[in-house]
Image (tube, rainbow, N blue to C red):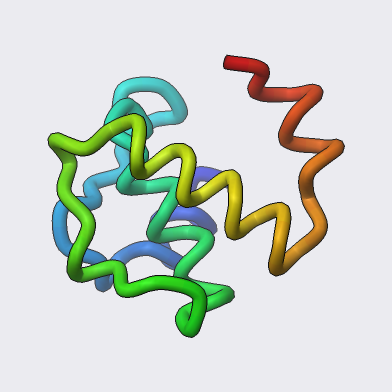
Length: 79
């Protein structure tokens, strides 16, 4: 699974995935993964690792709106 995620996000700046914990702390990896499948949904190049909360909110919102993943994500990542 880690290899697959790395492959999907390899071309994204500010994204270095080495594990399933700290590599995801700033929301950039999650945004990159969502953007890979829904590139029309937002401009990834405008994101900043310093805007952690914004990144997570954006990724969750797009996952819900574009892929209808709200119930799965909500149960898994209640924050």
